[in-house]
Length: 377
Image (cartoon, rainbow, N blue to C red; front, side, top):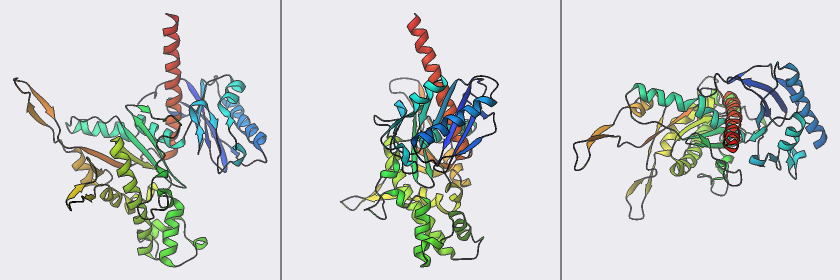
């Protein structure tokens, strides 16, 4: 596990619309009791003072000076330059705020800010599903080794992050992985986020039960209804998660066709996977129909549900063979089956984000050290 024995300390922040949660990590583990401060304030100056206060309180607890600050902010930003843009849940940031430069000047340590979906994906690639899957493949004698991952979150919104060959993919405008802006298969005039979100699940349940959405059960209760744990409209609950599955599956098939890697799902709705994950994978493996009327697999690869015992078994089956090298006596290994896995985070979303924030900061510090050594020569 990368950096799991590293003694450097990184201060972190979980920036939500309601609360700011400050902490510090060392060796991939939290080393202080989180400090929670309200995110709501009258103006930008007040919010910035709250952020400074939170990190000051963490510093007062630490035994040694932190090596960096690393955290995520939800919504639009120029992450590489640490400038926060217009946030719907934090309106005081409108117009752009140079948060990175402010914190670096205040605390005299490097500061790294990223999208929460990016850090979720990075944490899963370093210490979550990616190393776990590769270990399982190795145990089964397989020859594949996955190095690419697409992390998506199902919750208040629909977010995503891409890790390619161990590195986060930012894009030229810090807008890589913004899967929420794809077209909704069921409601083509809308975005996928209208269905792959808490509001989407509640909207469908309210529609199917002909009730006002203000009286709608929580997503957790809708899941329990769908599983038969609460005696209410089971069909409506299952329909709510079925629509999520179809829209999410369609968007993931489009995305992964360009990217090709493991998919891991996190966020508040991920715990409801027994009601949606198999339908989501089935949607990804659907067929197109050509203009000539033939059937065409919509992806070059086959997706497997890794939360299902049979799906995991098929994914891990060693299908590699030995083939001859032309005009030679040599043979080489070849696996003709193109496959990816779709699974749910086993770290928890918050843990993956924290590990991602920690590892990202240390990785950037290491790059800086290497550059400094090169410059000296």
